[in-house]
Length: 243
Image (cartoon, rainbow, N blue to C red; front, top):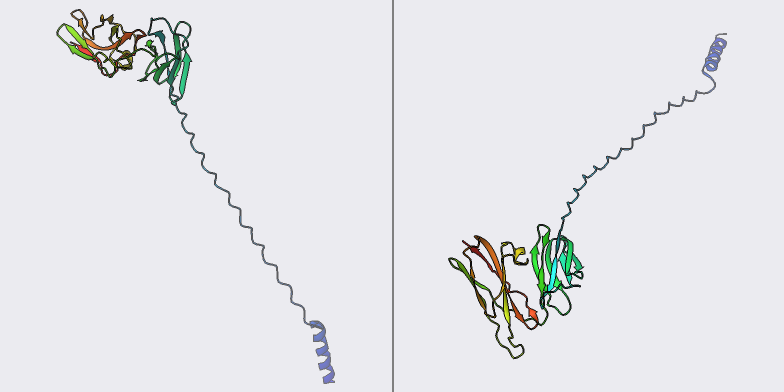
């Protein structure tokens, strides 16, 4: 009887626990990690705009070109200057010998077939007038001649070397033209003389009486004249001061 009771208790415990051990409950799934946020790119700083360069304004140069032979206006003379970028600016003289060229900063040259080409360096700082006598190609200039100036109490002496005779080029000088201007600037040398323009009668010197001439700076230049007309002038330091 006792053994039966023990057996019943054992069966009851087995039924309560189940016929097999319970399968372990699956463990709770782990939390899904948050994705790493994509970094927002930092925008590159906008560069400050470069300042707009101020264009360099050139100047207008105008004038009249005349024939060194007879003083008549010369047409079709090529006039050339240079702008701020060192680019050539050109024009031609009209039938009256007039020209006007714009946007020029420096330099000026005149050329035409059958005539001497004349060019010189000038810095322009304003609109300017530049008249010029263009010599014929056969005109004879001062060969290395320098104009010598001596300022006296009430006069100015000018002297220059006469050209020498050569087998290939006779010194057929007929006269000399002395020109004097009042502008002390370099450009003034290339303008028409506003004080004096006189032929010397063939003498390589001239005395200018100055008792009534105002004190100040002046310039002078001399041209030779032969069968082909006036030559290009002497070049060099020809400025002088009247007290």
